[in-house]
Image (cartoon, rainbow, N blue to C red; front, top):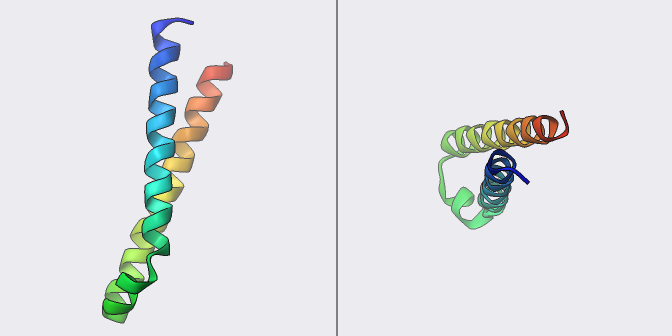
Length: 67
C-alpha cells in the first residue's frame, strides 16, 4: 500500500474515533439534564451536525479508497 492509502486509513481511523466520542457525548444524560433546556437543544443539534459531518467524511474517504 502506498503512503496516500496509509494516510487515508489513518484519517478514517481518526474520524471513526471522533465519531465514537461524539456518540458517547450525546448519550451523557446526567450532563444534559443539568443544562437549561435551550442549551441542551443547541448542544444536541451541534452534536448531530458533527456526527453527520463525520459520517460524510468517512464516506468520502471510503469512496476515494475504492476509486
